[in-house]
Image (spheres, rainbow, N blue to C red):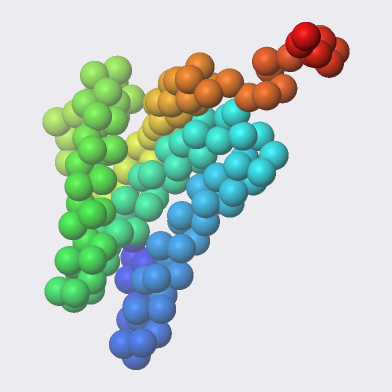
Length: 164
């Protein structure tokens, strides 16, 4: 996290705000681009693919938003509390799972911050991509069941006979 703090050190207020907004945009951009691409080209799977991408970036986005909490009261209200809630939702299950399966040492003092956090970010990206992907798949399945596409209604490609 020191590299994030070094970005903001001795910066003018406008540049500091610009860095905050650019970081949020860059972390949300893959999800937005995936959504737009899928909406045009792969309409049946737009929720599934977009949710997978969002799940992969959910923890880094949560950390970025939460870090904004410490940069001032306005950013704390706009970004910080959202990041805090996202972190509580996305990171807490990984800590329980990682200690349960002995992926992290328990009851020890660490001389270095962030070793467990890095593992949680990598494992969490995969886990949340799968979890959000399943949720997106369910939404796509419901939408495709309710409103099937025109292509699937006529699988043979033959024209319908005129009714007399």
